[in-house]
Image (cartoon, rainbow, N blue to C red; front, top):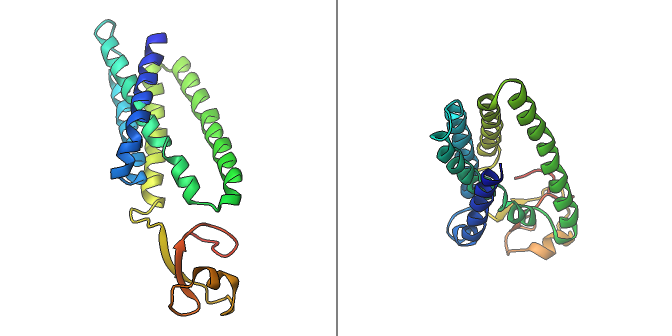
Length: 193
């Protein structure tokens, strides 16, 4: 158990060290979704091989947990960048607190699922159940997170009066209502695009 957790921790530490340079070259969406897909495939592979006997299974298990550590870190570490980009500075503490709570609700589902399925049906089934959860998360990200996700978004507010403070703050020389700025959900921007 200790060696398995060490392999996982080593993978996540390696990812944490490499992610800043990787995120300079790749979009957060690419890194995070790839991490979720790698996690799904690794869990499927561990599920497919977990019925084999030690010692031949031991290197596969440690390698799989090392890759899971990398994939998990890649899928969640950049979330801070997204949260920062998704809220005004004064709202960020609440957004970060909400994300923290949501992540713990997800663990509240995943940990008992893995334990109960593993104890009741076997480790192979537990790996496959977790692969299903990871696949669901990756699929939702691909569906709901647009591949083209610019920071500055051209949009308008036909419902606001021409002299509104928002236009004064973000005027770009166009019509009074058309402008662009870093887009976040707030009282004036109720929907994502």
